[in-house]
Image (cartoon, rainbow, N blue to C red; front, side, top):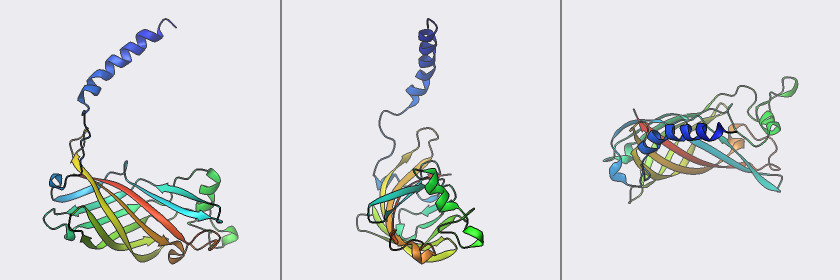
Length: 212
């Protein structure tokens, strides 16, 4: 035990230079003047698509899709011309239990159609087709085509601008957004269990984009 204190002290001393480099205030701020034009790439570490639906009328359950990739092209002088193209891996879905994940991704029995996504599902993709920005410039309705389970449907996202600024470790210009929408899973060939398990699925999205 007499070695623990010196080792702990050394580890803390080693962390001091790193801590000294960290900003004392959040580097991002909800300030549109910080946004510069160009093409940004999704920060796959910090971009998530959460989903939620009701189970048997008892309670809701939910999960998350991560590792989002794609691009956002934006011109602050003409935000309505922004273009968004993102891909969401379905196979990496995160849920609270292994049993539920297995049900979402397992193949159909004896060659039948799977209940939900099935084994090795293709990623989902959202490509914007129109952007309508509010008068303040920090909210927008972004309409686009969502391809999920091999089916493409129009979807409109309610988007809020949440912040912009330099990333602390890389100094890359970063923009953040939150968005929400509701889709019907039966529209995408995923209607197993309706109406016992709700057809409507609430999507809550948080995304960061870095200029490269």
